[in-house]
Each structure stands twice: as structure tokens, then as C-alpha cells.
Length: 544
Image (cartoon, rainbow, N blue to C red):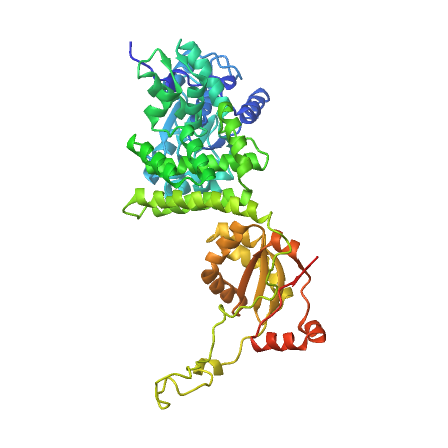
């Protein structure tokens, strides 16, 4: 006997066998009971979730010899022919292969012929979005006024490519992705029916890799069973599909927490030597850190097996949300660079070393909390190093002649004579800040997240002082300062120089910044110094 793959052997044959689409099956059953079945349907959703299967079930429900009925018998001639795709009254068309207007015209010509043995002539067009524009136009009139007892069922994974003129003439039903839990339960029933032993963790991995598609899950299980083992283990699934064991990511995360550069590189080389793909490693690690982040904010991700939850929950205590977002961003950048980088191993080695620095930063922050608050701290901060000087002041020991053009002027350079930029107010920046973030969000999502959490403190002559909510955010934004300066210039129309502090530290050590007039009242000399260096006050140190 010819072997029948699981995807065909266990294909649903009635409404109740369809997994996780009850919101659709109940509606269709009620339509059949009340004789309110539409003339055209549009089934949309991801691949492998039951669109074509439900189209066949609906066709059987309408054409069963006992029908129309919500429980087709699957025994009569009509039901069996529909199941075997041999019915002359239920025509299945592949939209990807029959895309032209001539194909649609042949279909329209066939509509004139009456049904042979069934109540309805039903056309199931899969991947309908692949039809050409002319084909869709030819189909419009037929959909609007189809002949009696003719039904159309369209299926597509890309509904946005179906013209609105077609969609508006159909009843649309959106299929859901199938959860890992539902796929796992279904696979367990099949494994039990096939008398195959399989570890729960192995079934979970198959369900997870199927990514919401039950058909893919059945195909993957077929592949696993074909290895011929009496009992299928988690390790078998990992080996067959090239999945990186989660234990490896446990180890990498511990290396990051320990700041162990040597161990993290050695462990990476070990997993590469076993034949694992770098792309799969990066994607797996991104998902792993994402799962820790979800746990951090109080969500238990369905992608995590119960056996691994305990370890992930322990790791979440070592990281802040900002740390995890920063680490995920680093990995995503590396994933993008892999497409064009000629030495992928070197690229990922440097990425891992960056991540071990992440752990060091966390430990430094913990140490800083213990620093004596009465230690000397500079309260007056200037932008002397960041300002662009427009003057050239030669040294008194210069050996150049006074007639040398480069040394001649201690006057403003030509561009200084241009009209000076206006001074922007803090209120204007705050008012327009959300619009600025929306403009850069698509290009710089991680930086936008950090910029959306900063606190504005003071501004003086377009020198802006802000507070980031963590040291990692501060250092990330400082590394972005050159690009940020250009983006701010393009948006606000002025050159803004930003200095970042850390919110937790500044709020502990500083009180409200005094004005220059306040300083002049108590210390005229200090006020004079501030004016001479073109400085400004960002805070006043609180001394106990």
C-alpha cells in the first residue's frame, strides 16, 4: 500500500475536525442551517491553517447527498469525489498557474453548463491574489451576478493584493495562526494513533518550528518519524532540523553575566564546530533574549517550554528592560550585517564580546550606588570641548610670519559673518519632540526608544542638557551624537548640542539649577567666569 503522508492522512474532513478556527466554522454552520450561504467567499490567513481544507468541507456540506448539511457524511459519491479532488462539480484551480484573463474566460464558459450529480457548482481558487489585473476585471461581472447554484471560494495568504472590487463582493473570513499549545495537542493525538513514542519536549519543538502552521507541523513530524527510531527524543529533533539547543543560550547568557570573554568565544566555536548555522544561532539568541524580556515585563511567552521557564526567570533578575533591548538591538544589527560581511565568524565574535561588556556595565552601576554621596562632584559643566570655535588664536611662540594668510586674522572666519542661528526654547523642543521621534522611528527604532524616555533639564544658547534613564541608554545616545546632531538640525532648523546625564544619579545629587543672575548675586566672580567661557549651569550640587 502506498504510504500516505500525515498532512493528507489527517486532513480535516468535517467542520469539527478543523483546529483553532471555530470563529469561522460556527458562522458557516449557522449559514447552512438557515439557508443563508453566500455566493462568494474569501478565506485569508497564513499558510497551513486550513483555508483549502475548509473550502472542501464547505463544498461537501453543500453537495452531500444528504445535504445541504453541517455534518457531511463523507460516504456518499459526492463527498468521496470532493475528498479525492475528482468531482466534476467542484473545481479546484491554482491561482498561481492560471493567472491570465483567458483562464478566467474558460471558467466563465464552463459556468453555462449545469451540474452533473450535485446541487451546486463550486469553484475553489487557491492563491487567488496571483491572478492578473485583467483576470480580476473579467471575474467582476460573474461575481456580481453568478448563475444560480454557482459558488466561489477564494483562498489567499496575501489579501492586500486582492482588489477591493473583488473583496467587496465576497464574504471574508480571516483564519488565525494556530498556537503552539493547540498544535502540540493535535500532534500528541496523531502520535498516539500511530503508536509512536515521542518525548513531550520533542513534540513541543516540532510545534514551535511549525510557526503557526498545522500542515507544516504534520510534515515535520513525518520527517522525524522517518528516521526510524522506536522513541523520538528532543535531541533527534534538534539534530534533524538543525535547531540550536536552548542549553547553549543558557550558557551564553551566563557567560555574559559573568563577563567571561574567553568562555563565551570558546562556547561559540564549539557550537559552530558541530555544524550549526550562524544565522540560526543569532535568530535563536534574539528569540531567547526576547523571551527573558517578556518574562521581565510579566508575560509568559508560549514559545518557552515549561522545563526552561525556571532558568529564564532566574536570568531576568540580572538585566533591566533597557539592557535586554540594547542586547537585542546589537544582535539584530549583526544579523543585518551578515548579509554583506565576508567573515561571519569574526562578526559574531565581536558581537558576543560587546554583550559581555553589557554585564560589566550592570555591575558598575551596582557599585556606583555605594559611592559616598559627599564625594567631590563637579556641578558646573561646560560644552567647551563640544563647541566649534570660529576663531584661530596663534601661539605666542609661533614661528610663522605675520603676513602668512593663515595666521593673519584673529577675526571671525568668513562663515562667522553669516547670520547667527536663533536660540530655540526648551518649551518649543518639548512641544515638537514627539513629532521628531515619529520622523526618525523607522530608521532608528532603538535610539528612538531611548530618546522617548529622556528628561529635559536646561538649555542655554542651544546647549541642551538631558537625563537618560540608564547608563546604557546614556552611552548609546552619546555614541549616536554625531548622527543625532544632524537629525536635530534637519528637524528644528538649528544646531543643538546635547549633553546626557543619568536620571537616577542626577536626581540624587542635584537640585534645581540657579540662573546666572542668582549666581551673580552671591558670587560675581563666578558669574564672570561662566560668561567668559560661554558656559551654562546644569545643576547645583546638594551638600549635606
